[in-house]
Image (tube, rainbow, N blue to C red):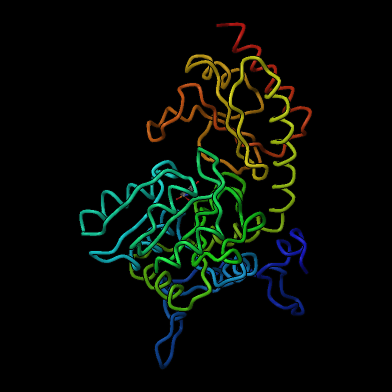
Length: 354
Ligand SMILES: *Cc1c(COP(=O)(O)O)cnc(C)c1O
């Protein structure tokens, strides 16, 4: 079972048992019947069979042991906080997901961790790894869509005595298996492609080293950064369609890249070649807002990786150094011809009314 759809469809399912469902329903529990010696399954903050099934699925996709958490940011915190103590050094991007650098500057730096924020490029990370404890990269980066050399940076981090953590949210484990490339921890927001319906907030972290997994799981129990079993069950239910959703989104993204590249109103079309997210730049804020208003199949929303196409003017948050007219676009699973026609029509409308 090596194909993407095969793996995604079967991941984490229990062995067949007469009269039982394919995927057991969510187990809602706080206190359980629990007799005798202590165990993580004794209480709902420390263990849950619905988490365990989804973690088995994620683990199968990442080739590692996975820990599910209440959000991508909960996963970020659960990876960073157990690993870093005063005097340690964290290298992280200044141009990627803003939550990571905010934890670094507002919480780790004041507690004595040296924080080095660098641009998402192989050269910048290589130049900053000396003496590092943890090197954190995001690839493809969001919203810059830079692709980093995970294997090369894992080697550089290890040579410096550091661990490499990879945020692979934009890629999903179907397009990037960071641990196979030498990373120590792979984490992602499952609120995006992995669940894919714009209705769940979840995250996970995966590692092969038992001590790293214990650290993440221990933090989850202690901080209570736990997901609801019902949400995790829905996430597991969404996993079998991951490969299909991703393939259609990528076909749509590729077609949009072609169409946008030929449009006079558009500059700097960027797409890593996989995943649903592309960016392009329109003349200014007003044109970008008119485009978003004119597109009928494209919902104005942040986030990405959902079945419905969505887009936003990324500069509205003030968290990223991007041009005023930059659109971050998440290709959904609509029919390609419909989506391309809608986007081209909206571009013409936003141009003409200017
Ligand atoms: C969304 C996102 C996160 C944070 O995930 P949440 O589930 O929103 O907490 C982290 N990293 C990247 C790259 C993201 O896109």
